[in-house]
Image 1 (cartoon, one colour):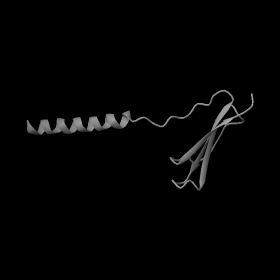
Image 2 (cartoon, rainbow, N blue to C red):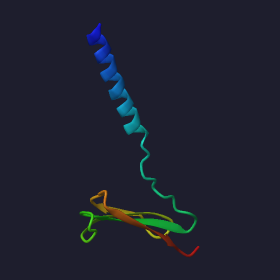
Image 3 (cartoon, rainbow, N blue to C red):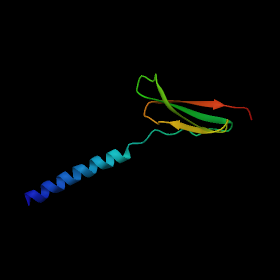
Image 4 (spheres, rainbow, N blue to C red):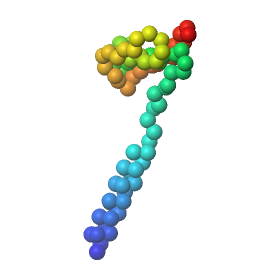
Length: 82
């Protein structure tokens, strides 16, 4: 009986941890407004000195996606003429 209670306790703890990990929100990808584009620049590390990729989408110019997507990034919202 003690073994069953121990297993249930461990299983409950794992389930609680998993629910917390799943419930953590991800960073939102911004939606461009009318006559806007969003451009991401990706870097090799936290110092953000070496560019390793880029991604752009929206309404200004052609969309592009090249190189690596890393956790080290910046983005800009660009306004263009209607």
